[in-house]
Length: 395
Image 1: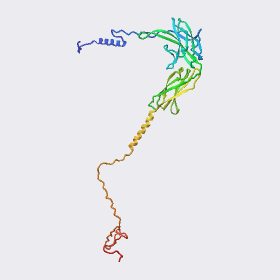
Image 2: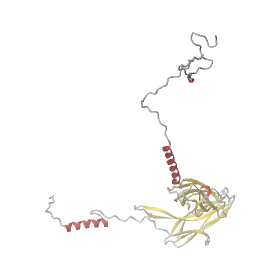
Image 3: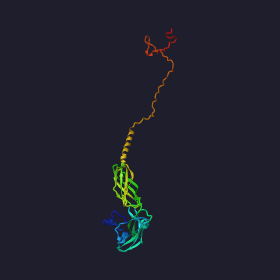
Image 4: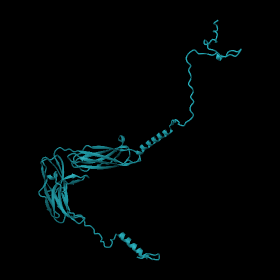
């Protein structure tokens, strides 16, 4: 391949055209040569079959929203469910009873088709399972509900399901068979002792303390409630946040609790905004539970979390440390003994103590013709006689 030399000329127009083609291909996302453009995936959604399921009677719907019964243990009742085919071709429905439960997010749900009922759903009997309904027609299907003699008092909840099978296609083109289910709820109250009860099992408080002592932060309260009675309950819940000494800092508006079936539990998370760091925060969960019949006594539970105003605590601590250090610097220090050699100290000779005995006093010499020195006068009674003579007055 020939090398480019300073005299080689490249057409500017050709370069510009090539760059424009590349830029257009990038922007439009056109496939390169030899590659086919991807085809859209098949629609995975199955065909919707319009059907309806509602409480009914021998002559048609009765205007009820749910099947609601109050029965004693051992009692039997016969009722009807209306199943309507709103489509344009005949449909075959599977009609059966099942149990209900409360989901973790508080929704009402029925057991899936692969789980057998053990409560009120097992007490519902249908003459046959499969029923074919013509387009635009309704079938009022009878069923029988028999309460066992050993059934526990309280609420038993379930549903009467009408399910129709249909074919669908997944994203990778595989054909699957799906069940479309509709149901009418069944609320059964078995006679006996009714024990409504709601328990707040746990309360957790989270608070991110702000550095600014006059700032505000969010406080999150998470609590779990359980229906520990034998009837379904609902109600409202609120959270009250107090500081030291019971000083109320914030309060949330009451929120509606979902309907909890017996034994069900539900977790609530409340976010309280604008809470100051008041050293110690106490959150009180205040529930006002109710049943379908009456209101229940309030239920309360508290939990606390530390929320120290760090700057207000750190400022006095820093000031105290500074004052302590300043006082230590001002305190006089004692001089250490010098190790430098110097002149030896002069020690005075010890005083000589004369031995006890008669003290000899020498007479002072007197000048001729003059009086004796008074400072040298002998002490009376201690004068000694002159040598070789007798004492005066002994003559």
